[in-house]
Length: 293
Length: 298
Image 1 (cartoon, helix red, strand yellow):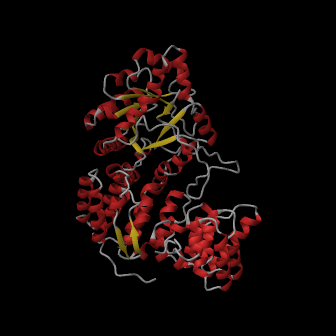
Image 2 (cartoon, each protein chain N blue to C red):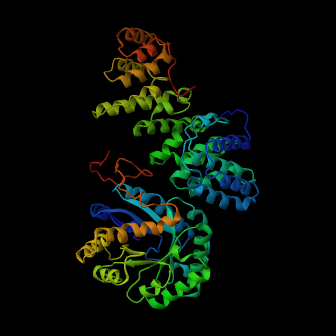
Image 3 (cartoon, rainbow over the protein chains, first blue to last red):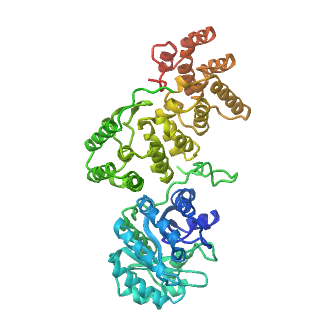
C-alpha cells in the first residue's frame, strides 16, 4: 500500500522515523507550521523556522525517499502574542507564494480568545487571496464550541468550504463538519485524540468521502506510523485496498492539490541520493551513502 | 576590478522579456502586470512585492529552457549566455531588474531577495547578479551563496556565470575552483578560469593532487585546467606525465591546458612527443595545436 501523512511535524523527528515511514509505504508528508513547545520571542525565529520547512527538512526527507511539503501560518497558541503575530503576518504573503507551500496552517482556536480569532480570520482571508487551502486546528479543550465557531468563521470570511480541512476531529465534532463542504481531518494518536479502531468505526459510519487521517506526530509522545497502522486496521475491518488508497493517499493529496502545487501523480518515491549535501550538511554520519539509480 | 560600460537594466529586461514572449504565453500577462507594479512601487513597498512575485514565478512561467531564443547579454561582468536559462530564471531576473528602478539600494534589494528565497529562487538570484548595473555591490551576497553545499545552488554561482571571474578576489576565486574540484563540477564551465588562474591556485591544485594520490584516490581529470596556467616546474611535469594517461579525459584536459604553456621548452617537447603516440584523433588535434583549447575563455 502507498500512504501519505498530511499532518506531521518532521522537524521534531529522527532519521529512524524517516526510515521506518518509508519502509511502511509513506511516499509523502505535509508538515504544518505550528508551535515549538515554548513560545517564540522574536520574528526572526519564525523566519528561520519557515525557511527550515522549505529548505533543510524537504532535503532531509528526500534523503529517505519521502516527498515533503509544508503549510505556513501562525498557530493559535502564539496568535495570542499580538505584537509578534502582526510581524509574522507581514511575512506571510511572500511565504505563501513559495512552491513547497500547499496550504495556510495550522490556524484556528486554542483558548478561543479574541486575539486568536483576529489572526485566524486574517489568515483565512490570506488563504482566499492566495488561492490556498486552509488547515484548521480544533482545540483540545471546549472542542465542540471551538469547532462550531471555526465553521462559523469560515462562512463569515467567505472562503470556499471545499478549500478547508477541519482537523483533529472526534465522534462529537465530525458530525458538525459532515454538514459542511469542508474536508474532515483526524489525528490518530497513541493515547489522546483518536485511535485506529475508533477511526475505522467513523469510516464505517460516515463513509470515505473527504475523510483524511494523519499522525500529527511532533515532539511529544506520538507515532509517525499511525497512517499505515490505520491502513492495516481498515483492511482487517473489511475495507478494500482501494478504500485505503482513497482515504490514506488520494484524499489528502487531492485536498492539498487545490493549491496547484502538488498532484497525486507527482507523489512517487524519489530516487535517494545520500551523497547530496545541503548547506554544508549531510545527514550521513560516517555510514556508506545510499545511491539509487 | 575594471568594468565595461554599464548597460541599463531595462535593456537586459527587454531582451529577456522578448525571449520569454517568443518561447510561450505561460505567465506572460502575470509577469507584465508585476513588472509594471514594481516599476510604480514606492521604495519601501518594493521588496514585499518583489519577494512575492519572485517566489511564485516558476509556477506561472514554467521551467522550459529559453534555448536558441536566449539572448547573449552584454553585462558589466562580460558576455552572458542565457540559452540554458529556464523561463523561471529569466522571469525572475526581469522582476529583480524592474525592482531596481524604484530607487532602493541595489545591494540591499538583491541580498534581501536572496536571503528570503528558497533554493530555486536563490539559484535565480545568483545567476542574475551580473545583470546589475554595478555587479560588485552584490559581492557579499555572492560570497554567502558560494558557502552553500547545495550543489544546485553552488553550480549556479560557479558555472556558466561570469560573476565570480569578474568580481571575486583571488582568495575567493581560488576557493571556488577548489570547491568545484571537490564536488565534481566541471571546471571548463568556470568562466574566466584561464584569465584568473594564479600561482597560488596552481599550488592549491598541486597540493590537492598530492593529497588524492597519497590517499589512493582518483584525481579529477579537469584539475589541469586550473593547475597548468601558472604551474610550478613540478606542476608542469605532473601535467605532462598525464599526457600519457590511460584515461582519455586526463589526456584531453592535460593537452588542453598545456598547449597554452608551449613557452616552456619541456612542455613543447612533451606535446611534440605525444602527438605521434596519441590514438584519439580529437586529442591529437589539440596536441598539434590545430584546435584552440576549449577553455571557458572565449
